[in-house]
Length: 124
Length: 111
Image (cartoon, rainbow over all chains, first blue to last red; front, side, top):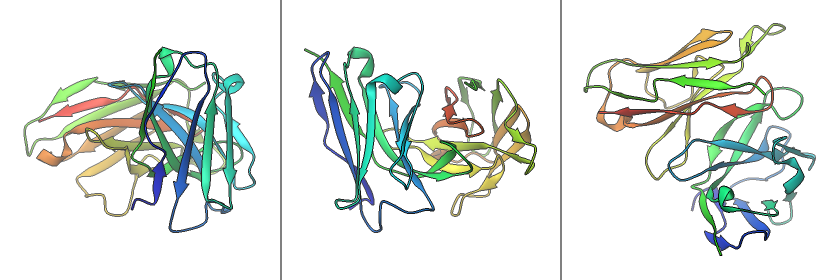
């Protein structure tokens, strides 16, 4: 079992809300040493950082998607969650959950542990 | 936002040869107070998640072969694979973490 596992692939209709979870095993999801984040990748294309959650539970978002995103951590389940509303075909992508090693104030850091990713397809 | 531009988009290298990938940031990612470059490199093989190779522009992660090296400072960075192996076929991405997070567009290395 991978230490970081996203929920299964899914099909979402345009204008609906995409919901994903990421389950972390082998250690607590909440730690002052690291945060957690989401990155997506449209098939055959590059990586786009979406945002993440600090150990305090405070989320931080990519400004370009902030109005549509909600991220949170459930420490009782050791899970990170993502909700993206009003989806369109442009949101079709592989969504990765990853551990972020923070390097200062704010949402700055690099990702040292990744899940395998899950494919989200937006289509009617 | 800091824009990261990688070049070339793809390159073909024979086994044993050197591969050089460039990454340029739209503004400096060198933090003056600690003199560190806030830049990482990742390797992504087909069907897999990205794997962290290098952080702080030149610090290799544990377990990463020493044929991989990172260099550069400020706005211009390079990932070098000194002697390409068949298993190095992948797409390589740079990422800045000086100001939130942005990735480069990727460079595909083919054998």
